[in-house]
Length: 440
Image (tube, rainbow, N blue to C red; front, side, top):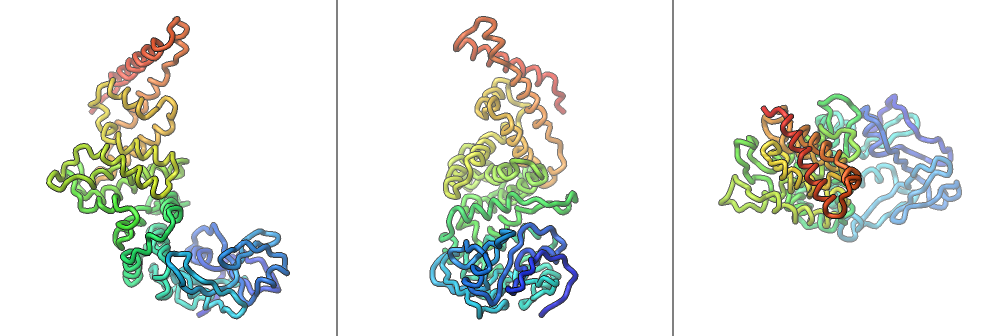
């Protein structure tokens, strides 16, 4: 099926080549969504032909070339055959006789299996436009099951396009579950798994409409639903059906709560420089609850420290950036202290400030407060409740940070005496702020 549409294309006219815009660029243009990446497909050409036209070959597994002037990527049409495990276990055939329909057939979803000519003509042999209209993410062919990475990609697309009303076709979700249960997900490299998670956590919209917020929680919900999370991050998956006290968690389920916390973290960190780390910390904050023996439910005494090894484990397993891990560890251990800030003694607050190293990392402390606020608001019926703890701790930290060693050096103090004097001055500063704060 081919339909002509009036769509702005960016295909460079190369008379010697049959070139198409393909994949996500076509999908997003049809959705009137900003296009960030443009992928070009060349049909009927050979490696030698591309090289003769000045293109530079960069692909190792299959022929991909850089345009001699624009440096954009152009790939030869190809077919693939499964030969081994994992998403790299494919052989590639990229000769001039490969048709555009054959190339599109190997793609993951129908909405990604469309092409566009320079005149705006849509090539759509697998009914991607119909699925776009119906807001369905559907696999193109049964070859979908050959690539375990597609489980993560489809979950990411489901999260990205959730605000548009997209859902995953039941037959596609069934294939994702089959892949997850096969053990093939374990063939994926840690870097590849983390890349998909990180891209999802980093997602924001260009819209100011709160109804169009990014939805990374959908990514993890889908992975949980199709058994992929159990394989890739069992400690997070284990939180589903672990109950919390209804007084503080009307949503009850720890897994549902964690997804609500992630939602709040997205709302609080749009365009934030460190948003991805804060959102990762939101995911990790309650991992320790999965270790609570069922006879102790719904209480989770000591879950904060119990969760620390689990944060370390997933960070090592997925090779998570160190500053993400450090923030997640601090939120995991101290989020309840943040909630109970008004009940803490000034000396306890000072001790926590030391442990959080607010003196050298004030920006990380700001991120810590955002993650803790996300935890407090990420509960059924709590979404609009005030969280004065954030402002109180911020003011206490700023007041304590005003204490300067120079003052005590000028008084003639040295060594340990300076450290003790600074600690006392910081404690006094925290006490003054606490007296000034009106607690409802």
